[in-house]
Amino acid sequence: MRQNYKFSIVCVTVYLILYTVSPYMDIPSWVIGTAYLLSPFLVVWMVISILKGEAYSGKTFDEGYFYADRNAPKSIDADK
Picture 1 (cartoon, rainbow, N blue to C red):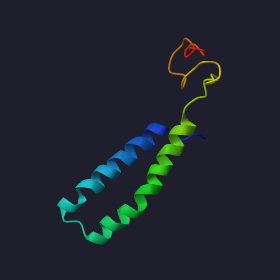
Picture 2: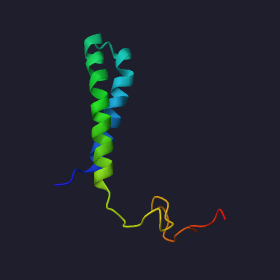
Picture 3: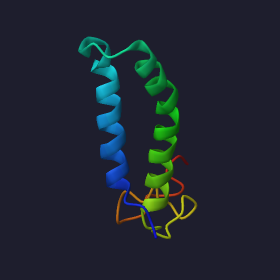
Picture 4: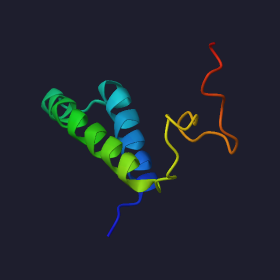
């Protein structure tokens, strides 16, 4: 079962916003420190779920496509 990448984006974004405002909310420093130590793992989870969540388009850079951002291929020899 593939993970829903939008869910991971929302979760990590809310987590990092709460972490950012936590010093102003009278949260104990050990909780803030623990949140700091957990945040890189959550960001890595988000990145992995994004990379695995999207369908592969089959287009390659060698064919003239740049990150499959357009329907039409770009010229391969535009710099010549």
